[in-house]
Length: 101
Image (cartoon, rainbow, N blue to C red; front, side, top):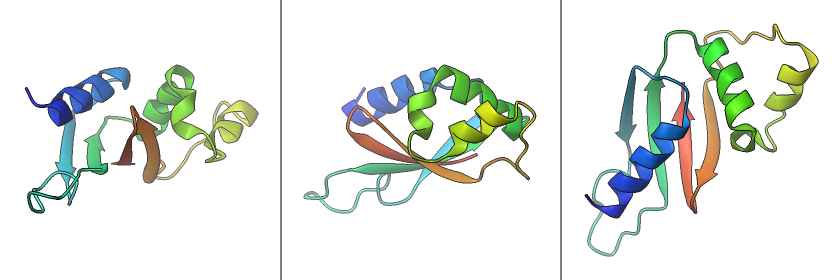
C-alpha cells in the first residue's frame, strides 16, 4: 500500500461513520512525475450531516480550529446548518484535506 493511501485510510478512520468517501482533483490524479501531492479533495457521504459534524467536532475538535464552527456547537447544542456545513478544510500529518460533507 502506498504512503498516500495509508495516510488517507488512517485519516478516514478518525472520522465518525461515513457511507462513502470519494477523492478527486489534482491531489488524487497524477499530474506528472514531479508533482508532489499536497492536498486531497474529498466528498464524504453521511446520513445526517449536522449530527455528523457535531460528533466529529466532539471527537476531533482540532479539525475545526480557526473556523468558528466550534463556537456554534458550544453556544447552541441544537445548532443546525442547511445541508451540513458544506466544505471545510483541515490538515493531518502535514497533508491538507478539503472535505465536502
